[in-house]
Length: 121
Image (cartoon, rainbow, N blue to C red; front, side, top):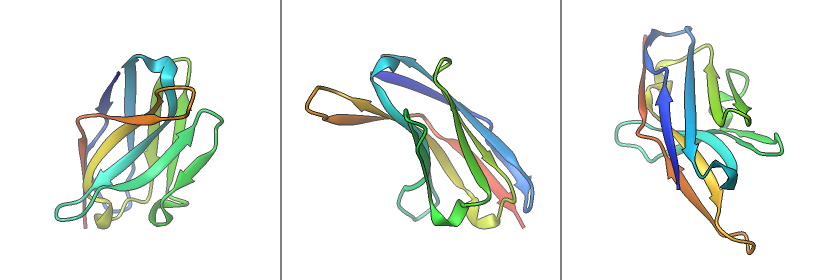
């Protein structure tokens, strides 16, 4: 398995910026993609941004143009630069690593413990 440790959350005013970081350790050679999800109170966990090993990215519509995901494959880290933050971005942000289990393409997800991001109006 892979262990994920997040950092960088906090409290910021609307319009401000935060940068989240996540470091992976363990069986990192199985990682297929890394990304960020978030969960606000009373809501389901949702995709924020993901980047595959190929460099292909996918963003939630609500963060396009404001958030940027980046990875350092050599360091097994993923970052999320969040600009122009809005109160509706308030949530617990979880780092995710998608791991390939076998040659048939079965995968499994590993999750970090989560980091709180609070945006005040």
